Every structure is written in structure tokens, then in C-alpha cells.
Image (tube, rainbow, N blue to C red):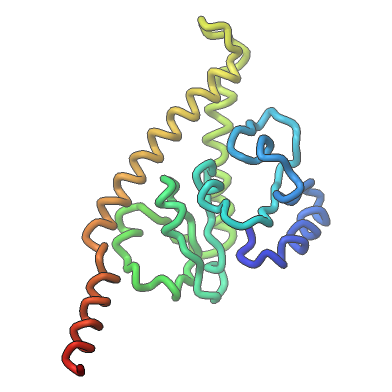
Length: 198
């Protein structure tokens, strides 16, 4: 999901040039990309998001998230958004635009800062390997309801993932609670200053 939509085509070209089939989100149906797709369904391995207003939904179905603009000195992008959806984000070391958040979020394990692309790749691969291990661990066995093992594994994964996401959302809400109200306090201070000048 590139930050600037005009870069979506360049991402698509780059992915295809290294042999990764991909598709623009705008050219795909919602059923293929709206959170119901499973690894065994047909389709390209990469979707390039070139639509507005869907990033929260995309975070909500993600198994792993890297929030860009942070591996090189670009200031970083908003890594609080995936947390609100229950996903702990990976970021690089260049988060100058978000230094106001402080270290506590990282100290509490609600965000993970990685020093370079190699560490990021290893972290993302580890997260995705976990999903594949869970999905493949059930083999071809059948459950009592008659679902094949893959369906049962997918149900198990979705339940485990939702439980983990709910835990992340609770921890994030607890971190956020004492930090709410700054906008209101600033507005009240402005009103107070203006009232003295009148």
C-alpha cells in the first residue's frame, strides 16, 4: 500500500520485473482481497493497494505489517494505525515524525523497531512462517464436522489471530488512555488566551 498512489504502477512494474505476479487492488474484486481470501485460493501473491480508504481494513486482515518510510531517513509513517486494528507493526529506525510517541510503546512490545532491511525481512518471514506452520500442521485429516484439515486449520488460525488481535487492541487502548484529550486541552488554552485579549 504505497503512501503515494501515483507510485502504485511503479511498484507493480518492479514486482513483475523480479518475477512476482501482482495485481492492482482497483482491478480486483472485493472477494479476492477483502479479507476472505485464503492461501490456497488462486490469485497473485502480491496485491498493490491503489485505492483510498481501505488501509484500516487491510491492517485488520494482515498477518504482519511493516509501516514504511522508516528504513531510510524519510521520517516514517503512522504506525499507530495497525495497532488500532490489533497488529503490532514493524518499523525502521527513522521515525523522526513520530518521536513524540516516545520509547514506551516499543518497550511494551507494541511496536518493533528493526535496524535494517535484512532484519525486517527476517521478522516478516518469521511472522508469515508461523501462519504457514499452523495451516499446514493439520495435514489432510478431517474434523468431526466433515471439514477437511485445511479448513479446520484456517478456522484455528483465524480464532487464534483474532484472540491475539484483541489482546493487542486492549494493550494499545491502555497505553493510549492517559494520552487522550490533548486536542481538547489545547483548544481550551487557546480559548482562555483569546478571552483575556478581548
